[in-house]
Length: 235
Image (cartoon, rainbow, N blue to C red; front, top):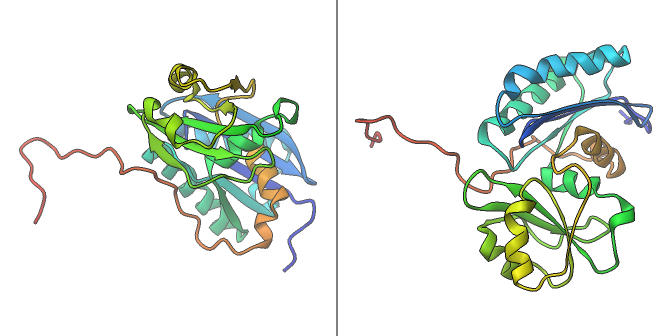
């Protein structure tokens, strides 16, 4: 079955420090909703989905497909978005695609901010001493795989060149990067992934026309799990 050239889509992001939902119709984003939150996405996601559907007069069954961010981010947050999107996809019999939060944040940088030879550097707060990092060329092609590192180690792991920084981890890295003599520009765009850019990426990269297989979470470290007191691992 051929996927529509100008589809109706629902996008979800709960991987980071916000909850974001967007609807696309006829290939254009027509409704968005985003709320900043470090936790609580499980309670707000479905009401937010209903809010954007009510705003557009659409229903889940009107969707041609669904898109979701795959992380990195909080273990619970990533799973909330994936579970909801997979449930919608299965219930409606429509395809699901996943996009990393790195790609979504890089896509959100305005063209007017980009300069030739500049390295778009996405920095995501990992909620520990380290940051999640991935670098992109101005055409949004990645330089290499994503990695996790402490702010003082990031500069040595980045490509040469001036940096255009985006993401909610920027403040933690700026001082170290400047001390190492990097030319830095901080993007004025939202430092948190927005579902509208998730949908635009999915459409522009024709993700629904290729077989992604099962959508899986992107983790750059193990989840924060500790054993209860006086308990030992089962051997």
